[in-house]
Image 1: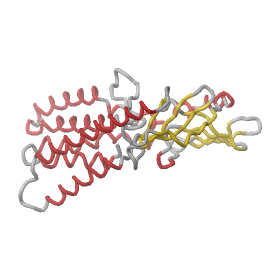
Image 2: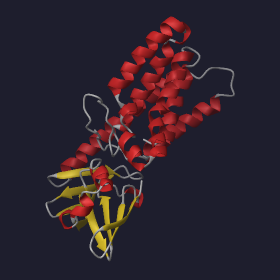
Image 3: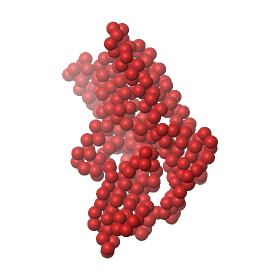
Image 4: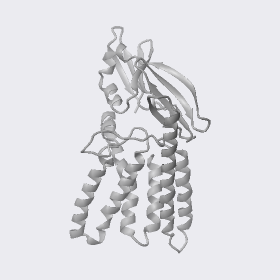
Length: 295
């Protein structure tokens, strides 16, 4: 999920608990957005961002280990703040599990596994989730000027509803998988229409992309896109290409126009995004002259 939605979730769950457990709730609010601090790896370049984003700060084993160490230190130095790292860890773990529902996945089991896991239940920006969080967020904001505390039941009911939303989206994704052709590798839900999925089916020589509606149980807008990887080994061996292909099983060379060759992730078509698109300019001798990776 996007950072704004994560922040709203942290406030919605944490703020009503401040009058009963202020240290714990403050830690939870901070922890809900803390994993995305790895986005600052972009300051060290695109490769650093692609390598570190949604990895170490999204790893449940590393979060729990850090919590135990910091909690022990707090217990002996600042006992009143002992629950602060516990709240941070709870917020970070909640953040990580929500990010599992997205597209590129996270390395949630580091250091035991370096595999990125994702369930494709929701798109990165998910309209139903944003509406749910936005409604609860403004409800809580409207209560801040009153003298009475926000009921803690607000946190509990929101958690139940959010869990139900995730369960429904899981069910919808499984339904889409049953409707989709056999060997479909990816089904990315639409950001605006949760019943609509962008599918990708792999073949040796091409990728078939399509849209799928679980309401009408139909597949439409099928398109075959040729895979040109074997034609351009100089591109598939370059660092930009290999970095992106490590993130997506459907990243290929798919377009050639004059002296420019284009590679992209055929799964990601929401908003016609160009994230991960790689444009490489070749010389007349087919050597790489210039590369541009859209990240």
